[in-house]
Image (cartoon, rainbow, N blue to C red; front, side, top):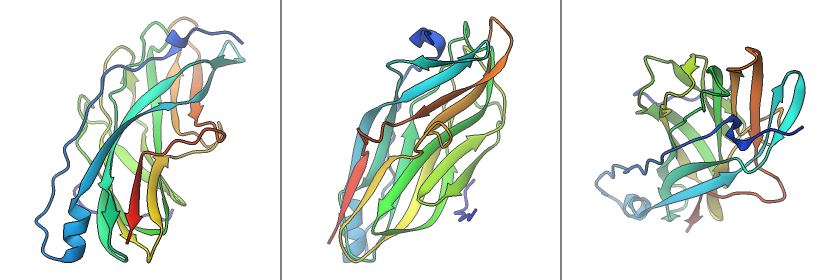
Length: 223
């Protein structure tokens, strides 16, 4: 995961699933040797709580989960020169699936978006903790990049998915924004498939951001 890659490629308790913890990353800056590098080195880090529209299925019935949120810490330049290259880093808070409702989970997906006057040049995964050798990869879907794993994680055991670092080239003007990816239950922003601890059934846990209340992590002004 050290090389840059580029791919085309109801009622229920809120306790059905829960997250704890927050990690604020540091972003290693390289020495600036040009005007564009100097401008890109002035980075901002934003920690944002993302509210989701959420649902799961219990005993064959789709059930809404109210008030589910997750924290993300994203680092990007505040400004960038036209046509300059810079990095953006996405860090999801550690995941803790309540074991009373999640015996185990798999097919984890965390979707991020980079949009505006920008070209995605590459991306890589970095770090993570308590993963037990789980394999993670990035799936490209237009301006969305989805961090995925098909490993099995035990409920009640906190783990931290790898950060996503994206290399982009700014356009001539405007802005580059970062935000949660996804758009619907069919195209989720955050997802896992879990074995319920009570009934033993496997069902999805699906989340996306309300289009009427979009969330922006960072904005990089070009120029």
